[in-house]
Length: 329
Ligand SMILES: NC(=O)c1ccc[n+]([C@@H]2O[C@H](COP(=O)([O-])OP(=O)(O)OC[C@H]3O[C@@H](n4cnc5c(N)ncnc54)[C@H](O)[C@@H]3O)[C@@H](O)[C@H]2O)c1
Image 1 (spheres, rainbow, N blue to C red):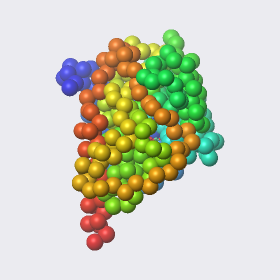
Image 2: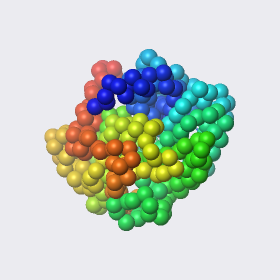
Image 3: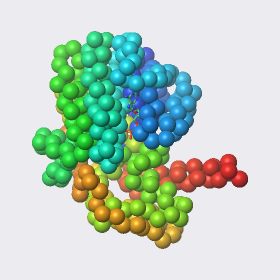
Image 4: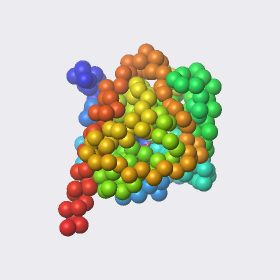
């Protein structure tokens, strides 16, 4: 719960959210606007997945008082103009997803590294106080779990490597005239999740009675993090004493895919059909966040356990499916 006083303090503050039509960025914009920030969202509606999903998120944000949207590529826009008067830039734009990154490395370099270099340079020129960068647990690769921020990163995919390069670019710029914080998000889920992510694909297949594609034996574990917890940590990072640091943002428990299927079976009340495929390249065996630093510096503690969050996500997907059936009837 946010104290009324802290909401009042934020009134009149201006920020920019890049990737505002994305899964996490759109949820962040809505929360910042509710807290009284004036929010400028930036997004290019890239083709990483169906842009219609992004356009619909952007359209619902334009109805939220206090938000405006700039459409364009961060590698081309006049960022000094976009950032003018902003105190904080939440830089969430990027190309996510491990598996496609092997075949599209250039796109990942463009959307993750080139954009971040431009965002950091423009933020400094425009007098922005702080950048909060959306980094990823993928920078750890197959490191020893639980992952601590002071461990040497060892990404095993182009996605992980580009996120690490971008994170380093932001943190290296952190100093007297610009502060930077890199948040390492761990597999984010909840209503609105990206359509290419496992939890959404599993639930969509189960609800439609189609086979679920499983890469590997299902014993791989993920530290799933509910989107509202991620957003709370991101808002806290705007003011936390964490300048120059990377900070983990995880859900607090590591859950195996076999455990996910057990829960999903109960949520959809039917047996699941599973099509087992070999382990995918770049897929790590375990992710698990050490949350000591985020607790200490951000005051962060995840609030939504996996089972509760996934039930909400499945119910959101069921509503979407019902609506599309009504439309096509
Ligand atoms: N979802 C997760 O589990 C997760 C985990 C770790 C890190 N992250 C990071 O968090 C951020 C947000 O993730 P998401 O799941 O919301 O992804 P998303 O793909 O839904 O959102 C990213 C948005 O950035 C926009 N974008 C990409 N390149 C751009 C460019 N050059 N110019 C302008 N806009 C551009 C896209 O159009 C998209 O709307 C990403 O940087 C991602 O790497 C996500």
